[in-house]
Length: 109
Ligand code: FES
Image 1 (tube, rainbow, N blue to C red):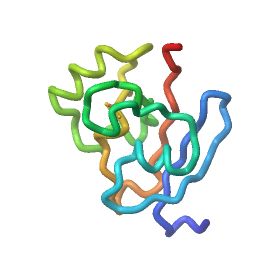
Image 2 (cartoon, rainbow, N blue to C red):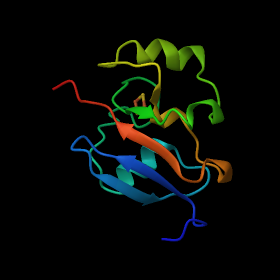
Image 3 (cartoon, helix red, strand yellow):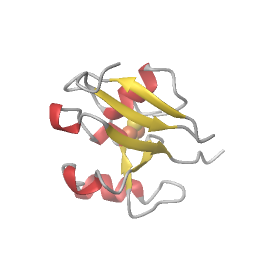
């Protein structure tokens, strides 16, 4: 895949790095899930489960749309929350997020 093609870069829980083709308007959670990486995303993006937790690369953090209060509250239920934690169903892919780097957060069970 060339750098111009819309994509994200996702590190899995074993540390393997995957370049995933992305579509504008898709949730980052959907991009991860539909490319076969293990993300539970139990509620399907309804902001009810916090199982789509990812860590956003520090360099990308300020470029994203800010968290809503609802996302912040739901993140409190996630495991091992860090400063760069986000719920990936709340990040909608767009052109200027091309190359976005995220890492899957650990699962609770
Ligand atoms: S998929 Fe449930 S909160 Fe993101």
